[in-house]
Image 1 (cartoon, helix red, strand yellow):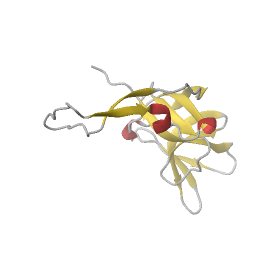
Image 2 (cartoon, one colour; image 1 turned 120 degrees about the vertical axis):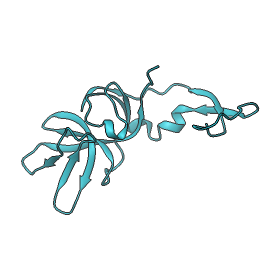
Image 3 (cartoon, one colour; image 1 turned 30 degrees about the vertical axis):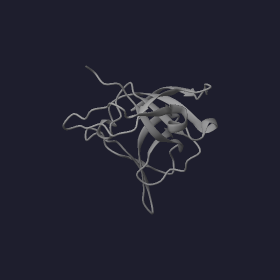
Image 4 (cartoon, helix red, strand yellow; image 1 turned 60 degrees about the vertical axis):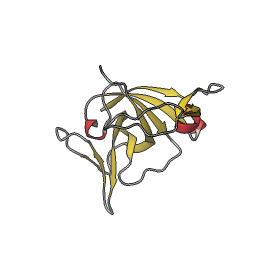
Length: 143
């Protein structure tokens, strides 16, 4: 899965939308009357470190098992250190890719979330570094 584009965060004065304070039922319907709470600021909810946060557009299907699909928008924080199991943006031999970061005592793996793809074992001769940690995925739903 490759990164199609990288965009720095441009902060607006605010992006506040109406917020309903109750959970949405995935079973039986629940009435929404009188539950409108306050506005929800998406910048505050999704972007914790604006100077280190970037948006990236994804291309490919190697991460579909964890809900990342081609065309999705990733929110990536470059200030976070990758931990085992995190979804990261890695640079491997000059190419951006999104993979699950796996670290054991003696090796680093970049694992896909699609059984059609084998994990990549990072070896000493490779040009490799973790560019950032994915914090959120934004994708639309088809009707």
